[in-house]
Image (cartoon, rainbow, N blue to C red; front, side):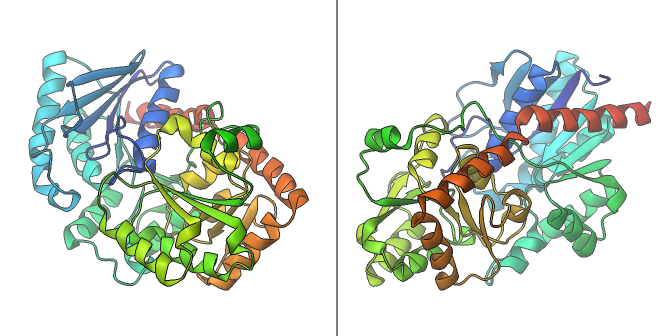
Length: 403
């Protein structure tokens, strides 16, 4: 390989943060797992992220050759929509770190538009290729759900980055086509590389054993895993539960969200009461990554009712555990889920349609079993090692071109 050392820019998504709490989610997991897989392949990766409340030390080695480096990037308590003015401070700190250590980075890989702004500065300074993974895009978000708004600055920066980056990694054809259509991006500089999953962690387990461990009884179990925010569409799951003919014999586990009071969770609890389904919904809160496979395996079906998913990591994790998925046909979800084989994709955000698909799976052990087997087989082709190999190939070709 031509590549030896890569700088990851993950400005606001610390790979050490716990997924499911606050704004931590699939992006945090992606940066960490991809870096670890690249490290296994012999590529040194430094992941640069901003100082935050939970950051204990400036440099943390998470595996041989893979480090997380925290740098100043505004006050720790700054909200996501207030971070853009602090990017120059972070860029300067990153450049000073590189000069002090004397390290040479052959490629810069940025994650999200804020990181991309920094990554473009560093790539120019170091004369290294800039690879960009957006994870989410403002114009797609705004089109996916009424009421979603994004600052004009973000929209402008995303467009500029698509014009300047050497290569863009898209998770799905839907994301690539949206870049071309909405941002006039050059399709020849966009590569399709899906997200990955840790197949050793997310694997089939004995359902009865994990249910006993979690204190679950004989109900049919529906599962949601992810952040608790309007874009994730949890409201649809509540209305769907109210449509289930056997809703009294089900239990819905909602995994994600922080501790303490949460305005969105409070709103959903009130909605559950008004729909008379509050007794079957359990808001579990955040669960450690190592314990997530217990929940996926305990479930009969994982439900992903999002308005927009650039990829849909929870769906892939569920499939790796052999659990079928019922999801909206949104963004990258149609790339992962094979309709009728590993679960069902619903084109309309209709509770009746979701309820019908859920009833089909939970009422047939044979269907659940066959879909579970197909789901695991599908996930086995999306290991992090496979993803890292494709990403390393992108680095190599760009480094060769730059020489």
